[in-house]
Length: 116
Image (cartoon, rainbow, N blue to C red; front, side):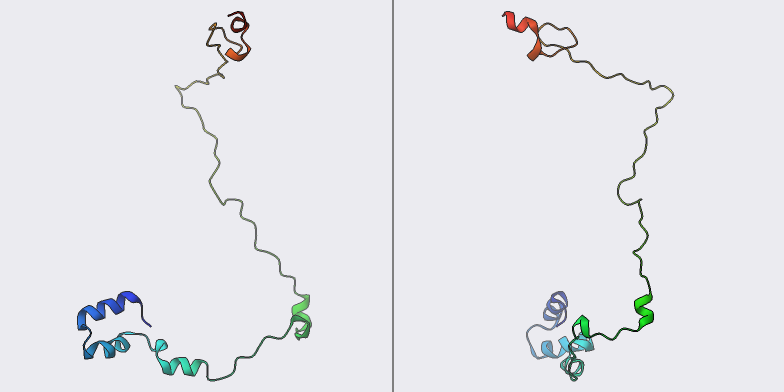
């Protein structure tokens, strides 16, 4: 069958009248017709035997097949950010207590919190 969009366009052009049925086969590929289908399956399709029964030439058995080369460039590129001329390096922020406002510890370990 041709695609649904083509069928809808043909139905819009011809309606459901007499010309609709004939026009489908005029606009479709010959491989979708019954004659092509019957020709494709006219002969019997042989079943592949088990791997133990295969007759493989020795030259093919001796050939070493290696995997494709590894490409490490897949994925997001990793690059080092370089600072501009006016930019300076910022040091790490130190913890500042919200109770006593001193740096070096947090409010959970503040000695002033235990007193109140």
